Structures are given as C-alpha cells and as structure tokens.
Image (cartoon, rainbow, N blue to C red):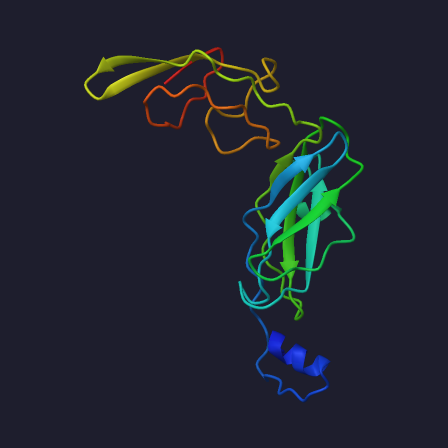
Length: 206
C-alpha cells in the first residue's frame, strides 16, 4: 500500500499514520537529462535530475545505472550494473555518480532507470555515449567569413577543425552534443545569427 512522504515522517516520529488502501501503480518519471559532467583517463562523472516516486512527486526508492561498450549486441538489461548507487534525492535536485575503472578513449553507453517503494520501474533513459579522457576540445574556428549570395541569404565559410584540436572529426558544428563535454571556444562575432545544420568536414560552409 502507498505511504506518502509526510506519512513516513510521522512514522519516524512515532506517530500514527493512516495508509491509503489504493495500490501504488504510478512509476517514477523517466530521467531525460543523463549527462557527463567531467571525465578523467579512467572515469566519468555522471549527473541527472532526480525524478519523483509518482512521476515527479515524492521520493523514489533507488536507481539502476548500467553501461556497455557493445550496445548493438546487447539489450540494455544485460549491461554492466553500477553499484552501489546513491539514494534518489528530492525531485528536481541533481544526483551524481562517478564510474571508475573505465578504459581510456573507449566509448561507453550509459542508461539509467528508477524504481519506487512499490516496485514500479520507470522506463530507461535515452542512451548516453561517453568517452573517458576526452577532455581536449576542438580547435577554435578563426576564419569565419560571410558572403551574401542573394536577398536575405548569406553563405558562411570557414575551415573545419578537429575533434581534439585539429585532429579527428568533430561530432557537430555548433551542435548541442559530443561524446564528452569538451567544446571549442566561439570564434569572432561577425553580426550573423547562429544557424544549425553544418556538418561537412574539410572546408565548412552553410
């Protein structure tokens, strides 16, 4: 049967508490912001926002965090489980777990889900790809130029940089993601608004 967070507090104080006769069938909310805060050569620090017991209300009971290096060959339930895990915090708070003993420069896929005190499991989060030790950002773009090609239309040209400095391929130009959170510094301001969709390697253009 369900007990509210306030009910648990009353019980802890030795006071009587009326229990609800309705079964708890509502799972915690899905974690949608699993992310890498930082990394070392053999570890990653993961962060996410704590969900609630029922959706985003109340306190959840536990987390289930797992990872693998071969997501295509395995179901997420067969991933390696990270233990022990911290208890879920207050809904909306940031919870953290450091995962140790990882191989440098090897890509790992992480997924997390939550369970409440009634045994209701949330759906797993979206997969997060992280690479320990990838802390060097792409080199800064230094030759961004604008060429008008028609009414209200501009062409942006620049030389693409690499994943680490000038080596390797970047995940995206101006995009919101990367295997590890290492972004280059922005180039000079030229009076144009940011635009998404530039993915060409070599000499970039849009």
